[in-house]
Length: 483
Image (cartoon, rainbow, N blue to C red; front, side, top):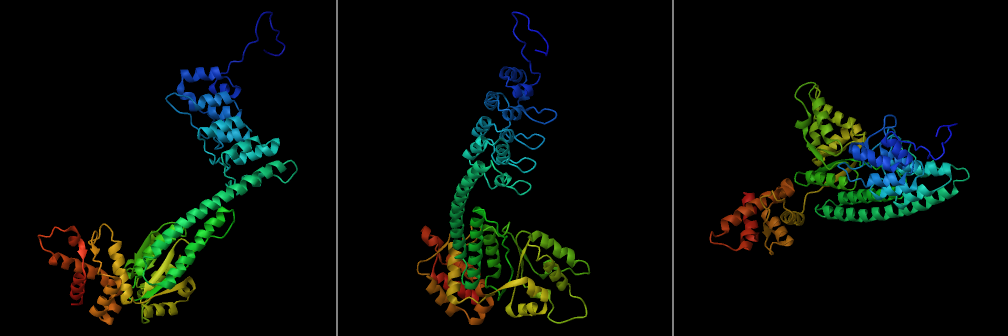
């Protein structure tokens, strides 16, 4: 009824008719909203012109519980959009939170609304609920969100958590006490979860590490890195702010066949598994992959490989070939490639592993000051003993990949590590073992399988015999290799 207008006797006051579905949502006109939706179901998620809000935004912000419930349970062809965002990037839950509408928030959350959705300013519903509680001196909406385990550690665009938004003045004691209590509980839960995950990762790490034969100093270093990284996860779960951990660049020194490339591949997987590297890729390169034939070719060629390796490991095999053994008047392009690699070693985007023979690598280390400053971990890959070679043979037979020619085959029980070690000791020379190291295992096993095929009778139908490599096969395989 307009101001000054008199009501005629016997007439009821005129009811205000709401012209849009949004006004129906704002004023709680359920019947009007129902009518408009039945006439035009596409209005369910329609957005108004100025605030870009859906009817659910409006109803939640004004705590029109009946409207919110009706919209959430709407059975039309289209479902209500719980995560629709207005001009400020706020969802309906944000609207309920910043206006202290606990009942609407409860309904939204019970229907699956995202607690951790962020508005354009990075605030979650809990950030806004704390802002409301601070103004209204009433914590109901905060309690509702905490009942659904809203995360107290989430930061907005200014790096502030919900707790940081509480003023130090009087009247905030109850709110601060409430949040303090819940954040301790949440940190405890996160720490327990992180601890369980850490144990699982460590078990997986140890299993992977057990497949590396020898190399005790390297395995000890990997063990330290893994434990440190896993404890860092636990520290962060407890809310501690700590510096990011970086892996140093390394040099692998040793003869061919001592496992340098294989360890680099394992290293990539392990460092990714414990969160040190974002990927597990290992980009393997040699001089020919980096160095061009003409002036101006080496830089782009090397930079391309560096881009490929970002987020993982760049493994530079026979790295000593990048530095000439003798000084020359002409510029060697290998030095240019090395300089390109060293130029990115400080940016933290890549871990570089240089590998090669011990003596030539010592020359590289001594001749380049930048190399020594950037490469701080050196690991010697000693020649394998016959016992270690026998262990490698057993590991290869036990963990063959499906695409391997030895997949599905096994060793006879008499082919023990001791027996195989004795066979290798007697069937090879020290010079041969030093030159080949682990490189003699694959051809040995390949020859042994060929001997198995040669030895078997076509009338053999015993499944075990068809896939079992015996000591006789290994003896013949080694003899063929020695020839």
